[in-house]
Amino acid sequence: MTTTAVPQAFARTGREIRVILLGVMLAMLLAMLDNAIVGTAMPTIVRDLGGLDHMAWVVTAYTLMTAISTPVWGKLGDLFSRKTVFLTSIAVFLVGSLLSGAAWSMTALIGFRALQGLGAGGLMVGAFSIIGALVPPRERGRYQGMTAAVMAIGTIGGPLLGGMVADQLSWRWAFYLNLPLGLLAFGWSAMLLDLPATRRKVTIDYAGIGALAMTIGALVLAATWGGVQYAWTSGPIRGLAALAITGATMFVLAERRAADPVIPLRMFASRNFTLASALSLVTGVVMFAGVLYLPLFQQTVQDASASSSGLLLLPMMIPILFTTQLVGRVMSGTGRYKIFPVLGGVALTAGAVWLSAVDAGTGRLATGAAMALLGLGLGLTMQLTVTIAQNSVDMTDIGAASGTVTLFRTIGGSLGIAAFGAIFTRSLDGRTPAAGPAYLDAVAHGTAKIFLAVAAVSATWLTISWLITEHPLRTAPASKPDERPAPIPMTQSAR
Image (cartoon, rainbow, N blue to C red):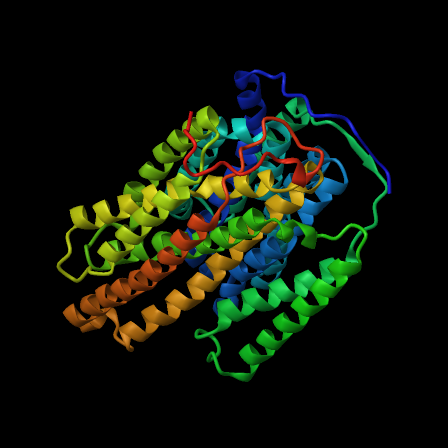
């Protein structure tokens, strides 16, 4: 197989790159906002369309298709034009949004949400791949602040915007609001995004894609249904577990034979890539614990307003925003990065241990301080996982690497939600708000137990970070992954 690639050009100024990336960031914001807005509007949707017993599938269908399609979009970007693949994912997402807004029944809405999720799988991974193609790893830290800002806006603005839509507009606008933002992202990227073309004879890895879809689908469904719709030891959950194991086995066999595997197993020969993937998995677990259960604790036990649920996460999101920018500047200036995930693990563990001691009498100031530690830890590491992974592979695999790391984060989030949901439900022990102080104590106890588990996971994060080998970040794409400089000795100056 022959490959003719036009070399990357890094002659653009920082301002030019930021202008180009603005359209890419808008597409990322679409993915961040969507689930939060739709989740807030769900009660109104059920009142209009009915189908309360199928309501969970509105979220599950979207999440499932996003998880399945993420690595596929990443690989397609490697095989074909990254720009074309990215624009296609935006278009699919917008069509799904338009049809979801026009849905006439809950069944139709679920189907259209699956289509929307299919497109959403390409938004985040496409953005990471494009950043990787435009900017060498050494310089990438300068643009991490844009990604962190999108995350903060999506996490905080999603619930607020969803509440406004539910109160002031029809639920259909929860989907129609995607259209102007998505069209702007599409047009901006179509006009300004200029990536070198890659021409190669390719063979689509249909067997690998099918096996991967079966594995991810079974994992996500087991994590979603286990302990909620079915007992963990029930037949359906055991069947999904067996299906996931079978799919994973088939996937490994298919990838070994494929000419262009959807997730090249050679990437895992790099220890740093494997560790970055594991770190991304842990990131998904920790972040979902904070985003889902801290607002619940604040609203229920501390009597915070549900209408401003996005603002409740400000103590965690503000440190993420500022720390990410600081890490990016230091990383671009020195090329050093290993210290940040290690410090991040310390901050996360400290914050989680603090939150594991909450009770019904814990004040908002103490909760906010602990959340700030969590945000500090996440900010020190979140963007670095993608950078480390991309720095560990050849440019021809950068999309697959981005998709794999993003997939691990999604799986981590799904598994975390399942595990923490089981812990929380067991702590409530059937108590309802009618139980008064006993219910508040149960919610506080459940939150504390969840963050005790998060502390244990954060300790794992610390171990993974310490094992990372600090290869200097490339200042230009390497032709082969093993053409990186030698690891930096621990005693070497950071200058």
